[in-house]
Length: 363
Image (cartoon, rainbow, N blue to C red):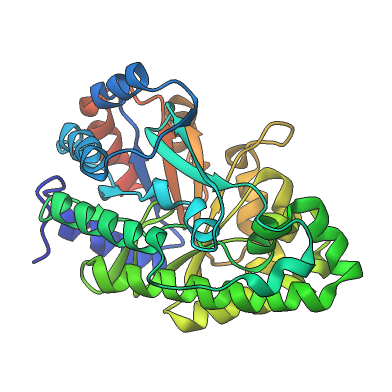
């Protein structure tokens, strides 16, 4: 029987999540309860929002250990899993010589990374080479080893985001020049996408070589856990384009990297919901995280419509705890959805609510 010290009811959760991801649970709902955290409060005292130095990986895994230890008494559908946020985006550009900058996020305890565009223009593209001996790749491997050792037997390590396709072109020449290049230099965009595949494949293969999953599945910051070796994709550049651009430039790279593994999950922001019908048919897609953004209705508020547009694809949405509980009581919650609930007062309240979550059936 699979076990994690910080999630005693792991076997039951995995059984529920397997039903969700195998699309046998369209009449059921799932929930993660975000309760107050002293560990996060300490992080907020230590870090202000904004740029910071690369942190000690051992200190970072100690943060995750403390966070999940606090929440070990939760009886929700969450699986404790640390996220390699330091490698979130900057790793890919760093491997090609980019200047990696780190940023602290007090709201969730992350320290993320990004790079400024690497190239002044496309004439410099031929100088780019991926070398697994690069110091940034070694730093990546060392952080994975520290995380694996620090989490062993207690919690998992989540996959982290791909930066491929147009996301990678953004890192090379910036967003504006990427969109211009689709019209003016499509040959170079295609070459960059090919390099992106090579780089992302190496990064993600290294992840699965070093980081253990559980019960044949992958820990996921997006969907908790999903069967198989699953990658985490982003189609953010197409949020600001037509669906036709996604079909021309986005679908094939996404499906290609999904084929290289056992599929993938992706997220859609508020300004990208026009893509839902298209991305829901991506071969190898396992689930969609529906993000919220200013200027757009919260996904929870229009969920019935989004659920209808995405067919049987498992969805993940954010919701306020009290609003969720009111809709649960009125039996208004669509099924096949994982609800990430914020503003949950305490563990005892969360666990009582989970009794109703597990008993809920659509219709």
